[in-house]
Amino acid sequence: MKKKLLFVVHTLQIGGAEKILVNILKYISKRKYDITVLALVDDGVFVDEVKNIEGVTYKYVFKSYFKKARANKESKFHKIATNIMSSIWKRYLKKLKYNSRELYEKYVDEKYDVEIAFLEGKVSKFVSSSNNKDSKKIAWIHTDINIGTNSIFIDDDDEKNCYNTFDKVVCVSREVRNRFIQKTGRDNNVLVQINPVDCLDILEKAKEELTIKKNNDVPVVCTVGRLVQVKGYDRLLEVHKRLIDEGIMHELWIVGDGVERKKLEDYIRKNKLEKSARLMGYSNNPYKYVKNSDIFVCASRIEGLSTVIVEATILEKVIVSTDCPGAKEILGDDNECGMVVENDAVGIYEGLKAVLTDKELEKKYQENIKKRSELFNLRNSIGQIEDIIDG
Image: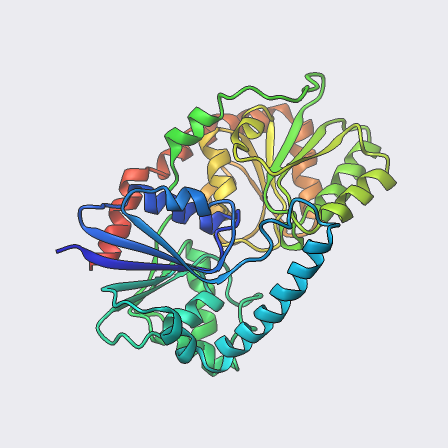
């Protein structure tokens, strides 16, 4: 008989954790498992993809009113939708914070053998309230839980109690595990599991031709992610301007979309960077941009284990990353396969300047990064995840 698995997420919006979940859903054994995905909010670019994966059932708790309105943010409907969602969301968060068991019982009407909270914070709080005493419960931690995930908990004890309800806690990097233990005091059955990455899919999509004109006279620095404050694109643009002012010419491609877009556009316009800094918008194939760049940069303030750094590794790019959890696990503790810099604007500036001006350093990273992609074998990762579920 198949095991019934429940994966719970917040939304299926574009993001590293959500993309990793899609990889798991595609390749995990359908002979062994009957799989349901429950999104707390029915929204995101991956919804249709998840619905089309054979052997996976998609459900949601709250319907999003943003889908139709998102195309025109100035429309009256968008403003109405925003107000509706804001009101619903506030009530939902209050319920989740103070009476999560009632919320769980209302929206989970089946019994599962394994319940997996695939994100920290809200999602973990929801699954920890399961009334199914017979299910195995697994929490998946993708980031440093000391930062930005505790607002859903009443206090520190509530957060610790939440994670203690889980049979296993899976962390995406050693540093994420260390910080989880530091915050919760729990160290039993806290595992590290590298995210599965579909290398063949990335390499195939990277072959697609660009529809933009590339300036071959200068190196291209590329980054991919949601345009949100935590990704650090504000300070990346400041670094870009400083390097341009110093005569270190290059193009900066930022692939992604999000709430910070207008702020970033205003900075580019104010500082007359239109010819060198380009906001590409959201793309369902960012790999063609990464492939056609010379240097990949991760300017994030917070990460768990950056999926985009892994993808840039597979595409054998020279990489500069801020010192977020997971960066050294990908690039090496001694910077042998890429440069891990201080997590501030000065660190990003020094790292980019070094690889843009030192050809020998660039050559070293290009040679060493080729060996690193072997770490991210999809078949091995999926097998290890199935062992975690079954063990």
